[in-house]
Image (tube, rainbow, N blue to C red; front, side, top):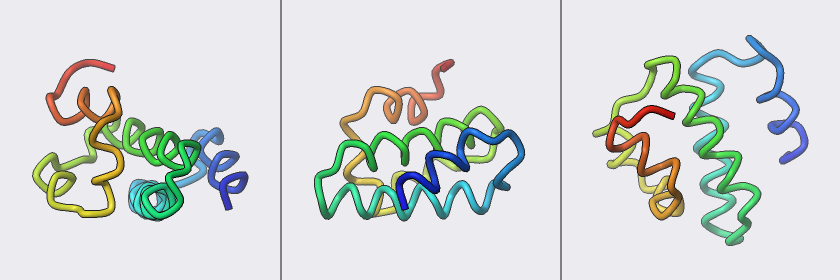
Length: 85
């Protein structure tokens, strides 16, 4: 699964915003359960892409329990605080 999402995230226009968000959720959940840093990193990658597209709601991100594993990641903090990436 990781390889599928990693490849899909590299293809411009390969996934729409909804698919990117679902991928971020799935990868975050796996990262949370397995403590797998690769899944946490790719979840943040998907969220950064959505952030750059202006397609994220910070309150929704903070409410989503699946993203709890991402909260110590520097890029997560950048998204939450609205800083440039």
